[in-house]
Picture 1 (cartoon, rainbow, N blue to C red):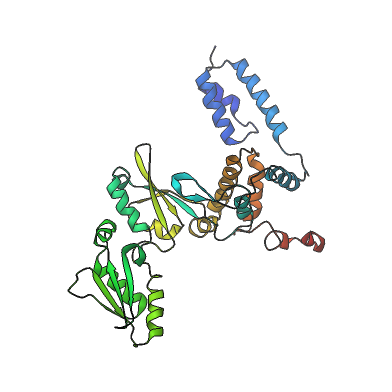
Picture 2: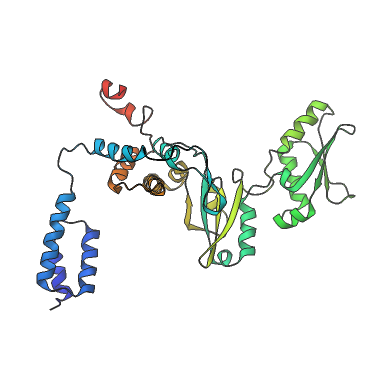
Length: 335
Protein backbone atom coordinates (compact mmCIF):
# COMPACT_ATOMS: atom_id res chain seq x y z
CA UNK A 1 0.00 0.00 0.00
CA UNK A 2 1.36 3.40 -1.04
CA UNK A 3 2.32 5.74 1.78
CA UNK A 4 1.44 9.43 2.00
CA UNK A 5 3.76 12.31 1.13
CA UNK A 6 3.85 13.32 4.81
CA UNK A 7 5.14 9.86 5.78
CA UNK A 8 7.76 9.98 3.01
CA UNK A 9 8.94 13.40 4.24
CA UNK A 10 9.21 12.15 7.83
CA UNK A 11 11.22 9.09 6.72
CA UNK A 12 13.61 11.18 4.59
CA UNK A 13 14.08 13.86 7.22
CA UNK A 14 17.63 14.19 8.65
CA UNK A 15 19.12 11.54 6.34
CA UNK A 16 22.94 11.99 6.02
CA UNK A 17 22.64 12.40 2.25
CA UNK A 18 23.14 15.33 -0.16
CA UNK A 19 20.05 17.54 -0.53
CA UNK A 20 19.74 16.84 -4.26
CA UNK A 21 19.81 13.08 -3.70
CA UNK A 22 17.05 13.32 -1.08
CA UNK A 23 14.97 15.50 -3.42
CA UNK A 24 15.26 12.99 -6.29
CA UNK A 25 14.45 10.08 -3.95
CA UNK A 26 11.32 11.89 -2.69
CA UNK A 27 10.05 12.55 -6.24
CA UNK A 28 10.69 8.96 -7.34
CA UNK A 29 9.05 7.50 -4.21
CA UNK A 30 5.89 9.56 -4.78
CA UNK A 31 5.80 8.68 -8.49
CA UNK A 32 6.35 4.93 -7.89
CA UNK A 33 3.79 4.82 -5.01
CA UNK A 34 6.08 2.71 -2.83
CA UNK A 35 5.07 1.07 0.45
CA UNK A 36 6.72 1.87 3.77
CA UNK A 37 8.73 -1.37 3.74
CA UNK A 38 9.95 -0.75 0.19
CA UNK A 39 11.05 2.79 1.04
CA UNK A 40 12.94 1.52 4.11
CA UNK A 41 14.79 -0.98 1.90
CA UNK A 42 15.58 1.73 -0.66
CA UNK A 43 16.92 4.07 2.05
CA UNK A 44 19.11 1.30 3.56
CA UNK A 45 20.54 0.42 0.12
CA UNK A 46 21.09 4.08 -0.74
CA UNK A 47 22.93 4.76 2.53
CA UNK A 48 25.09 1.69 1.92
CA UNK A 49 25.96 2.79 -1.64
CA UNK A 50 26.58 6.39 -0.54
CA UNK A 51 28.94 5.28 2.24
CA UNK A 52 30.80 3.05 -0.23
CA UNK A 53 31.16 5.99 -2.66
CA UNK A 54 32.59 8.35 -0.03
CA UNK A 55 36.34 8.89 0.09
CA UNK A 56 38.18 7.37 3.04
CA UNK A 57 39.69 9.93 5.46
CA UNK A 58 43.34 10.74 4.59
CA UNK A 59 43.11 9.13 1.15
CA UNK A 60 45.42 10.75 -1.43
CA UNK A 61 42.62 12.04 -3.65
CA UNK A 62 44.99 14.25 -5.65
CA UNK A 63 47.12 11.29 -6.74
CA UNK A 64 44.00 9.25 -7.57
CA UNK A 65 42.57 12.12 -9.65
CA UNK A 66 45.87 12.61 -11.49
CA UNK A 67 46.04 8.90 -12.31
CA UNK A 68 42.35 8.71 -13.27
CA UNK A 69 42.67 11.58 -15.77
CA UNK A 70 46.25 10.87 -16.89
CA UNK A 71 45.77 7.20 -17.77
CA UNK A 72 42.85 7.76 -20.19
CA UNK A 73 44.80 10.78 -21.48
CA UNK A 74 47.43 8.39 -22.90
CA UNK A 75 44.73 6.95 -25.17
CA UNK A 76 43.65 10.34 -26.50
CA UNK A 77 44.39 11.32 -30.07
CA UNK A 78 47.76 13.04 -30.34
CA UNK A 79 46.56 15.36 -33.08
CA UNK A 80 47.34 19.04 -33.17
CA UNK A 81 45.36 19.75 -36.31
CA UNK A 82 41.72 20.79 -36.22
CA UNK A 83 38.63 19.39 -37.80
CA UNK A 84 35.48 21.01 -39.13
CA UNK A 85 33.31 20.55 -36.08
CA UNK A 86 29.95 22.01 -35.13
CA UNK A 87 28.63 24.27 -37.88
CA UNK A 88 31.91 24.10 -39.85
CA UNK A 89 33.84 26.01 -37.17
CA UNK A 90 37.36 24.69 -36.44
CA UNK A 91 37.69 23.17 -32.96
CA UNK A 92 40.81 21.80 -31.24
CA UNK A 93 40.20 18.31 -29.85
CA UNK A 94 41.93 15.52 -27.98
CA UNK A 95 45.10 15.86 -25.94
CA UNK A 96 46.04 19.37 -27.20
CA UNK A 97 42.71 20.71 -25.90
CA UNK A 98 43.07 18.96 -22.52
CA UNK A 99 46.57 20.45 -22.16
CA UNK A 100 45.14 23.92 -22.94
CA UNK A 101 42.56 23.51 -20.15
CA UNK A 102 44.91 22.36 -17.36
CA UNK A 103 47.56 24.89 -18.47
CA UNK A 104 44.96 27.67 -18.02
CA UNK A 105 45.90 29.21 -21.38
CA UNK A 106 44.64 32.79 -21.62
CA UNK A 107 43.71 32.25 -25.28
CA UNK A 108 42.76 28.81 -26.68
CA UNK A 109 44.16 27.90 -30.09
CA UNK A 110 40.67 27.86 -31.62
CA UNK A 111 38.37 30.14 -29.58
CA UNK A 112 34.68 29.88 -30.46
CA UNK A 113 31.33 31.02 -29.12
CA UNK A 114 27.78 29.69 -29.21
CA UNK A 115 25.35 32.62 -29.21
CA UNK A 116 21.63 32.13 -28.57
CA UNK A 117 19.37 34.93 -29.79
CA UNK A 118 16.29 36.66 -28.43
CA UNK A 119 12.94 35.66 -29.93
CA UNK A 120 12.80 38.50 -32.49
CA UNK A 121 16.06 37.29 -34.05
CA UNK A 122 15.99 33.55 -33.34
CA UNK A 123 12.80 32.96 -35.37
CA UNK A 124 13.79 34.97 -38.47
CA UNK A 125 16.85 34.04 -40.55
CA UNK A 126 17.15 37.53 -42.09
CA UNK A 127 17.23 39.16 -38.65
CA UNK A 128 19.73 36.55 -37.46
CA UNK A 129 21.92 37.31 -40.49
CA UNK A 130 21.80 41.07 -39.73
CA UNK A 131 22.92 40.34 -36.17
CA UNK A 132 25.68 38.08 -37.50
CA UNK A 133 27.07 40.99 -39.59
CA UNK A 134 27.03 43.15 -36.42
CA UNK A 135 29.27 40.56 -34.75
CA UNK A 136 31.53 39.34 -37.59
CA UNK A 137 34.48 41.66 -38.24
CA UNK A 138 34.52 43.25 -41.71
CA UNK A 139 37.81 44.47 -43.17
CA UNK A 140 38.53 46.32 -46.39
CA UNK A 141 39.40 43.11 -48.30
CA UNK A 142 35.84 41.86 -47.66
CA UNK A 143 34.26 45.02 -49.07
CA UNK A 144 36.53 46.41 -51.79
CA UNK A 145 39.56 46.18 -54.08
CA UNK A 146 42.48 48.41 -53.05
CA UNK A 147 44.83 49.82 -55.70
CA UNK A 148 48.05 51.71 -54.93
CA UNK A 149 48.30 54.60 -57.40
CA UNK A 150 52.01 55.50 -57.22
CA UNK A 151 51.75 58.21 -59.91
CA UNK A 152 49.13 60.24 -58.01
CA UNK A 153 50.43 59.23 -54.57
CA UNK A 154 47.10 57.79 -53.38
CA UNK A 155 45.17 54.62 -52.54
CA UNK A 156 42.06 53.98 -54.62
CA UNK A 157 39.42 51.83 -52.89
CA UNK A 158 36.77 50.42 -55.26
CA UNK A 159 33.85 49.27 -53.10
CA UNK A 160 31.63 46.31 -53.96
CA UNK A 161 28.12 47.76 -53.87
CA UNK A 162 26.39 44.39 -53.51
CA UNK A 163 28.56 43.47 -50.50
CA UNK A 164 27.89 46.83 -48.82
CA UNK A 165 24.13 46.26 -49.12
CA UNK A 166 24.47 42.68 -47.85
CA UNK A 167 26.52 43.71 -44.80
CA UNK A 168 24.44 46.88 -44.21
CA UNK A 169 27.37 49.31 -44.18
CA UNK A 170 27.49 52.72 -45.89
CA UNK A 171 30.33 54.42 -47.75
CA UNK A 172 30.33 57.31 -45.24
CA UNK A 173 30.72 54.85 -42.34
CA UNK A 174 33.75 53.30 -44.06
CA UNK A 175 35.28 56.74 -44.75
CA UNK A 176 34.85 57.75 -41.08
CA UNK A 177 36.49 54.53 -39.85
CA UNK A 178 39.42 55.04 -42.25
CA UNK A 179 39.91 58.65 -41.10
CA UNK A 180 39.97 57.58 -37.45
CA UNK A 181 42.23 54.58 -38.06
CA UNK A 182 44.69 55.98 -40.60
CA UNK A 183 44.97 59.64 -39.66
CA UNK A 184 45.23 60.43 -43.39
CA UNK A 185 43.21 62.44 -45.91
CA UNK A 186 40.13 60.44 -46.96
CA UNK A 187 38.06 61.72 -49.88
CA UNK A 188 34.83 60.43 -51.49
CA UNK A 189 34.72 61.57 -55.16
CA UNK A 190 31.35 62.28 -56.77
CA UNK A 191 32.18 60.10 -59.78
CA UNK A 192 32.37 57.14 -59.52
CA UNK A 193 30.00 56.89 -56.55
CA UNK A 194 31.47 53.67 -55.11
CA UNK A 195 35.05 54.85 -54.62
CA UNK A 196 37.15 56.20 -51.75
CA UNK A 197 40.52 57.90 -52.23
CA UNK A 198 43.10 57.93 -49.42
CA UNK A 199 46.17 60.19 -49.52
CA UNK A 200 49.05 60.34 -47.02
CA UNK A 201 49.54 63.60 -45.14
CA UNK A 202 53.09 63.78 -46.48
CA UNK A 203 53.60 62.90 -50.17
CA UNK A 204 56.18 60.12 -49.81
CA UNK A 205 56.29 56.58 -51.16
CA UNK A 206 57.11 55.22 -47.72
CA UNK A 207 54.01 56.83 -46.18
CA UNK A 208 51.88 55.53 -49.07
CA UNK A 209 53.12 51.94 -48.69
CA UNK A 210 52.53 52.08 -44.91
CA UNK A 211 48.97 53.28 -45.56
CA UNK A 212 48.44 50.42 -48.03
CA UNK A 213 49.42 47.96 -45.29
CA UNK A 214 47.55 49.66 -42.45
CA UNK A 215 44.26 49.99 -44.36
CA UNK A 216 43.84 46.18 -44.21
CA UNK A 217 44.17 46.12 -40.41
CA UNK A 218 41.21 48.41 -39.63
CA UNK A 219 37.94 46.77 -38.55
CA UNK A 220 35.21 48.62 -40.46
CA UNK A 221 32.25 46.83 -38.89
CA UNK A 222 31.66 44.14 -36.28
CA UNK A 223 33.86 43.00 -33.40
CA UNK A 224 37.60 42.75 -33.90
CA UNK A 225 38.72 39.17 -33.32
CA UNK A 226 35.49 37.51 -34.54
CA UNK A 227 36.67 36.17 -37.90
CA UNK A 228 33.53 34.35 -38.98
CA UNK A 229 29.94 33.78 -37.88
CA UNK A 230 27.88 30.77 -38.98
CA UNK A 231 24.09 30.57 -38.61
CA UNK A 232 22.60 27.21 -37.78
CA UNK A 233 19.00 26.21 -37.11
CA UNK A 234 18.61 24.08 -34.00
CA UNK A 235 15.05 22.97 -33.38
CA UNK A 236 12.79 25.97 -33.93
CA UNK A 237 15.40 28.71 -33.53
CA UNK A 238 18.54 30.04 -35.18
CA UNK A 239 21.83 30.02 -33.26
CA UNK A 240 25.12 31.75 -34.11
CA UNK A 241 28.52 30.05 -33.95
CA UNK A 242 31.62 32.24 -34.11
CA UNK A 243 35.25 31.65 -34.97
CA UNK A 244 36.92 33.83 -32.36
CA UNK A 245 35.69 34.89 -28.93
CA UNK A 246 34.97 38.34 -27.46
CA UNK A 247 32.44 37.60 -24.71
CA UNK A 248 32.15 41.06 -23.15
CA UNK A 249 31.58 42.85 -26.46
CA UNK A 250 29.08 40.28 -27.74
CA UNK A 251 27.03 40.65 -24.54
CA UNK A 252 26.65 44.38 -25.30
CA UNK A 253 24.94 43.71 -28.65
CA UNK A 254 21.16 44.07 -28.67
CA UNK A 255 19.37 40.87 -29.64
CA UNK A 256 21.83 38.47 -27.99
CA UNK A 257 20.34 36.27 -25.24
CA UNK A 258 22.85 36.86 -22.43
CA UNK A 259 21.46 33.93 -20.40
CA UNK A 260 22.32 31.39 -23.13
CA UNK A 261 25.72 32.42 -24.46
CA UNK A 262 28.81 30.20 -24.22
CA UNK A 263 32.51 30.43 -25.06
CA UNK A 264 35.29 27.86 -24.82
CA UNK A 265 37.66 30.61 -23.60
CA UNK A 266 37.87 29.95 -19.85
CA UNK A 267 39.90 33.12 -19.24
CA UNK A 268 37.11 35.27 -20.70
CA UNK A 269 34.47 33.49 -18.62
CA UNK A 270 36.55 34.23 -15.51
CA UNK A 271 37.01 37.93 -16.33
CA UNK A 272 33.31 38.48 -17.23
CA UNK A 273 31.35 36.12 -14.94
CA UNK A 274 33.78 35.33 -12.12
CA UNK A 275 35.61 32.40 -10.59
CA UNK A 276 32.63 30.06 -10.00
CA UNK A 277 31.63 30.29 -13.66
CA UNK A 278 35.26 29.61 -14.64
CA UNK A 279 35.30 26.51 -12.41
CA UNK A 280 32.15 25.19 -14.07
CA UNK A 281 33.66 25.91 -17.50
CA UNK A 282 36.81 23.93 -16.65
CA UNK A 283 34.68 20.94 -15.58
CA UNK A 284 32.47 21.18 -18.67
CA UNK A 285 35.32 21.62 -21.18
CA UNK A 286 37.47 18.82 -19.70
CA UNK A 287 34.49 16.42 -19.49
CA UNK A 288 33.41 17.16 -23.09
CA UNK A 289 36.98 16.75 -24.38
CA UNK A 290 37.26 13.31 -22.77
CA UNK A 291 33.74 12.29 -23.79
CA UNK A 292 34.37 13.21 -27.43
CA UNK A 293 37.28 10.75 -27.41
CA UNK A 294 35.03 8.02 -25.99
CA UNK A 295 36.67 8.12 -22.53
CA UNK A 296 34.73 8.03 -19.25
CA UNK A 297 36.23 9.68 -16.16
CA UNK A 298 34.35 10.14 -12.88
CA UNK A 299 33.24 13.77 -12.63
CA UNK A 300 34.67 14.05 -9.10
CA UNK A 301 38.24 13.71 -10.38
CA UNK A 302 37.71 16.56 -12.84
CA UNK A 303 35.90 18.61 -10.18
CA UNK A 304 38.87 18.22 -7.83
CA UNK A 305 41.26 19.50 -10.52
CA UNK A 306 38.92 22.45 -11.19
CA UNK A 307 38.71 23.19 -7.45
CA UNK A 308 42.50 23.23 -7.09
CA UNK A 309 42.86 25.50 -10.14
CA UNK A 310 40.33 28.04 -8.81
CA UNK A 311 40.56 27.79 -4.99
CA UNK A 312 42.50 31.08 -4.63
CA UNK A 313 39.92 33.13 -6.51
CA UNK A 314 41.77 33.14 -9.83
CA UNK A 315 42.39 30.51 -12.50
CA UNK A 316 45.86 28.94 -12.09
CA UNK A 317 47.51 26.28 -14.20
CA UNK A 318 48.50 22.83 -12.97
CA UNK A 319 52.24 23.36 -13.38
CA UNK A 320 55.40 25.05 -12.15
CA UNK A 321 54.02 28.53 -12.84
CA UNK A 322 50.70 27.84 -11.10
CA UNK A 323 49.75 25.36 -8.38
CA UNK A 324 53.15 23.63 -8.08
CA UNK A 325 55.10 26.82 -7.33
CA UNK A 326 52.95 27.45 -4.23
CA UNK A 327 53.91 24.22 -2.45
CA UNK A 328 55.75 24.73 0.84
CA UNK A 329 58.39 22.06 0.26
CA UNK A 330 61.36 22.83 -2.01
CA UNK A 331 61.42 19.17 -3.10
CA UNK A 332 57.68 19.25 -3.90
CA UNK A 333 58.19 22.37 -6.03
CA UNK A 334 61.04 20.66 -7.88
CA UNK A 335 58.94 17.57 -8.65
